[in-house]
Image 1 (spheres, rainbow, N blue to C red):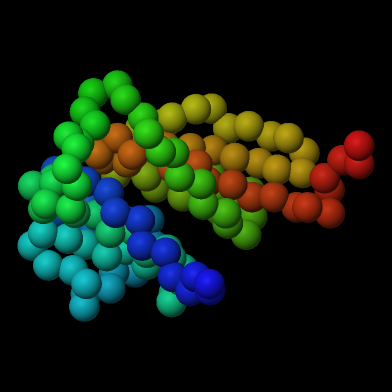
Image 2: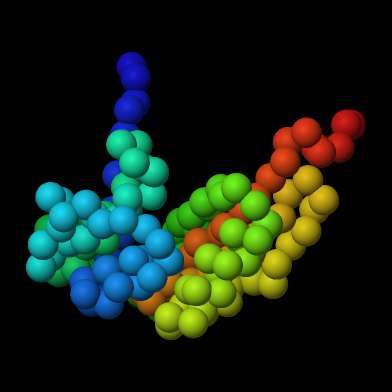
Length: 136
């Protein structure tokens, strides 16, 4: 079995606000898979997509209630090319309505910072240099 693409589906309250938020972070939108019920954010061209679905539409795909309040079922991690890019993405997210999730963590070989998006989904932004991974 060869997996060639991943589509992560997430419930959101407002499609337009979500589209603007992710566009400001520098992500492209796939308009072919976007409409008034969904926005397709390209995380990695031809490979990884985040499908943000209006809550009512999301509910048509599942037979369980959507998690509300202080629950967390998934926390996403995105790898980027530099420490500066980690902080820049989080800064832009915070300037556009996101919330700081945890303080930045520096492990020497890996650096991460994180935010909650407009709908409370957690995103960890990470830079790692495997060549600096300590030998055990």
